Image 1 (cartoon, rainbow, N blue to C red):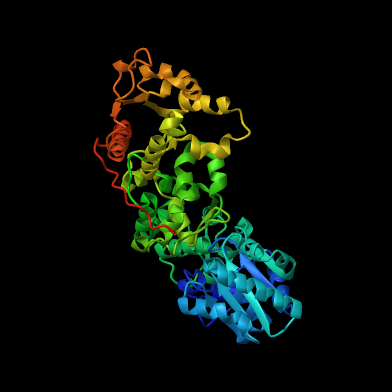
Image 2: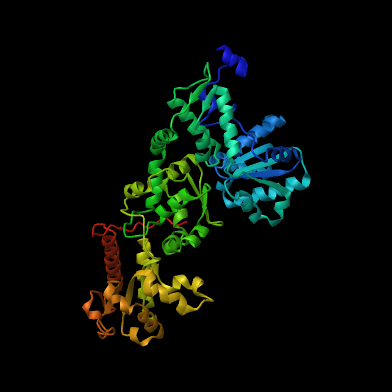
Length: 521
């Protein structure tokens, strides 16, 4: 080691290696940075009977912080670490309330535990807090709103536990991590600011980028003389994306396709994935996302309300998804459990990825693809067609599904724009009852001028008299015989409507939507 290195950093016989400095996994040594609330966490850990919850996105440093704090307090000998990802551990976690003097037990991935186990731990934590025992303590680690889940099981628990939410680390903390790595390797990284920004608060991503930067600059251990690393970060990210693609491309494509690739649909899973990538955090409140993107409400709400998203993440045929995503129905929050996956999603070329998934476009005009107009006597037929179109992930307006949004509002003001312009097509059930009802008269007044815009699809009942609309016979429609097999006819209508959407989007005019019903919870 040179005199320059000795004078700058002090002689050290153990030369730090790259993998020890910028670590890709495990607890860092040279580059550990204390989070903002580190002292509070240490005080909570040493308070008798006081249990604590560490929550926040993956890769933010929750587990590392706890392990470092435990070591600094000298209580690591009484420490036991368990994970909700291991079935044997789950059984032991569930038994914890029945045990005595358990020491300090860390339960990682708490959010993945069954509700019954969460309930037991919640009750147990109250007992420990009230007894102020020095021989038992629980530390729960989970993603967003893990503490809120606990309080949901016991409203009076909130004052008995400490909840520490580790947000995205501030830029200065990422800078501190990189600086410590520079000192250990005796290098100067000119792209420090850019790395701190790209890491988006994740220590793990900062470690990954610095590790790859050093590798590509042929720095694999402490340099004998101070070395400047000025490789372009874009080149580094391109190489990182190749590595991450091998790990995450299949995961991302599988999620984006959902249960079945339905080209006529609105790609709800693809859009949820893209919204997640665009989020400032590593999680997405889907309820909030839909409020901001009403044009996708009809299709994405179907996925959420019917439990399809939960079923997808638990489906045995798509087991590749389970380790990476978590959806909490009680909070409508979809989270990614690996920050490297979020980094991969954020740096995708989404237009190219959309084509790889199987869609030719990721842009959909208007809030609905179809709006159904029908008389009350034909509601059963309309409902069944709505169900068939929804199964194809096609955004369809059907009044029953919108009741919770219509109540307390002026109904005419709510419905008029849907039939006038917001729905790409209006599907009108022209039965004998259609011209006799007040609401069908109102709806038809909104859309009748759209016949000339190729936007109205008449379903002509064999029992109805023609010419309810003055010139509807000039336009192509579909036939329906209520005395024949209605299920088969409605299926054919749904298929035809689906094909029309596919042609509009430049897809082959063929039936590509084989219904693969999800395994319900």
